[in-house]
Length: 433
Image (cartoon, rainbow, N blue to C red; front, side, top):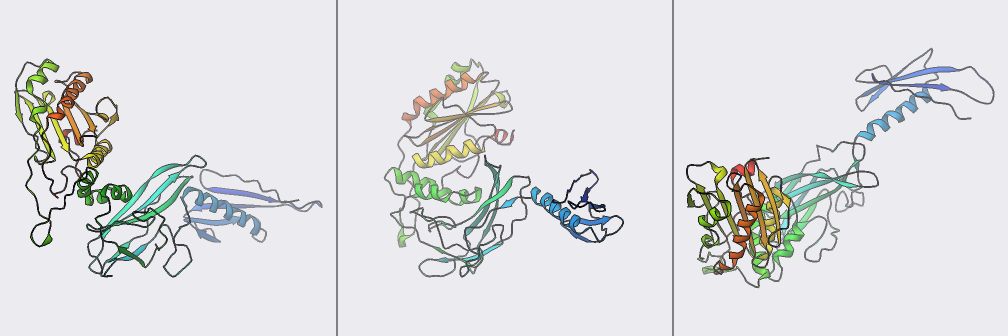
């Protein structure tokens, strides 16, 4: 018969009682008490911030109890930390031993043709976390961003902040390397085939960046790229080109010596879309407006704004209008960014191809996307001007009906798309929760 090992855990520590009984012949019983306390040395040994000791008539018979207590304590300690998945990549290029998903990582970035190191390439490393047993759900991620040095080398430190909880796990690790003029490099898959990458290693990794080819499509490249805010900021210029790719146009206008040059383009003008009389007709406001521009972004060939500022009234009476004309793919990127970044965004699908509402304090907002025209429209209205949500929608539909009156875009230039790396509604809307 196996020993009977009852256990009791007390709030002040972990006190594990064990009674050793042999069978079938009766023998003398000995009781041994094992205590596990944080930061207390009782003789014996310590591990993981715990000290293990025992008390009783003698210590000679405590070996089994000690081992049982050790197993229980290890289970307790291990249950509070995350599970770390087995790395699908080796520790080094010349090794078959699996790497450590937690890191650290290091490597070198070179030009795929010349093998010369590339300095200043953006390196974004991320760990993805999950939670749950059976029904698994994402828990979040941790990102570390750095740049390659003059020798093309990068170093990613070991993950220091681990998720907590009984069912959490470190699910995967990904490195993205981005440098303008090259195809982005991911540690998990390749572009444009999207096949799984098999040449990544934790230490001594070699990243060979392939130069961008005219046959590649920027829209597909952005979908492949992924990444966090720093990567999206660095690749924001591609969103413009992605729209032009889908429309069959090219933004590569070369000047003397083959270098890219800016082509003069007509500025976007959205004044035909809305007037102060039309706002008064919808809201019943009897005052006057000062008609001007919003100050957050300058007017360009891709962006324009209108600010209907109510005279002698606070901003709760103001109306703001913003329009981005970016092409289909870039407009989709801008719309998704606004949906992700604006406070309390709620999808409504009530206007355009996609739309959502936002509200921050006394300011209401309506944002909608018109894919065919490559347009994103943002309308804000103070709660004292638009007293209910239907008035905001009515003004929005009026603007939508006029979008065909906007002049056709002129020859595109290769400047970054304004606003793709910024949250664009007024500061009072951006910061409010």
